[in-house]
Length: 394
Image (cartoon, rainbow, N blue to C red):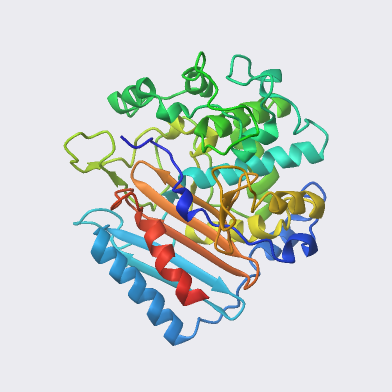
């Protein structure tokens, strides 16, 4: 059984540490003007359309993957300095259903992690916490609690097992997909487990890490995490259609309907649209739209408006790395991933699959939203689309 929120690491997007890592300049989020930040975050493409031959190849790739995976609908965009291309293909849910629209909201799953870790880095910049703090300073009782630092958690090197890998956790989730979970309930599943390895020595993708970081952020700021996202990222970047839904199972209208086979032993397809996202908390609960994801892809890849130049450089210097479990071309850094020259993250939560990537060499942003998480041979549909896009965008 697949965990409810997971990362297809083979498709984690990031960069090959070109010179942009050291030349990126940025203004700390606390001092930059919102209008300036919003403009910078959306400046990666002109209003022109991409050349017709490129557009045709991208659409053909979408059509081929949709034929293979049989997903109801896809919303995808590519933004380059010479223009943009957007496809609205298929329907919001299984037919009969309305056609997808550019304004549709979707659950972005683990792309949430990029927001959460950015908040962590902002708090470190302000001196409100240290990345060298161990997790037991804030949340006691975790495996490796006295050795795993906040940086280890952000880097996925803490050695703390994913709560989504514990059968008691997933069994309880699928038994009641409407349950509102607290973050403490989620991390309690790993109490008493043995560390997977000494902190800092290996890579293991774990949703527990980012849930814990969300708990730390709430403690340090004294505010609900939704307010911290809004004040420190979403409001600054003008991301008016992105939200952290908290205990609500609802998506804003219009929205994609999500279908999944997760939790169904007979592989029957179920509607997961209103399943509780609280099982993901700050590891995967956020909701967004295509154009908001475009803004975030640029900000994440450049640091503009969200981090100082030094902090952004440190983040990008964390990939690639030689930590066991990573490779020179595919690795995970500080809440961000590296895949063949692309910087970003993938996202999955029951019913939804999303990809967001930024290429600093070509200043290209790619966002892909698919209304199912049903894959083929461990390959998810949005990731398959991006894999088909890469040779076209080289």
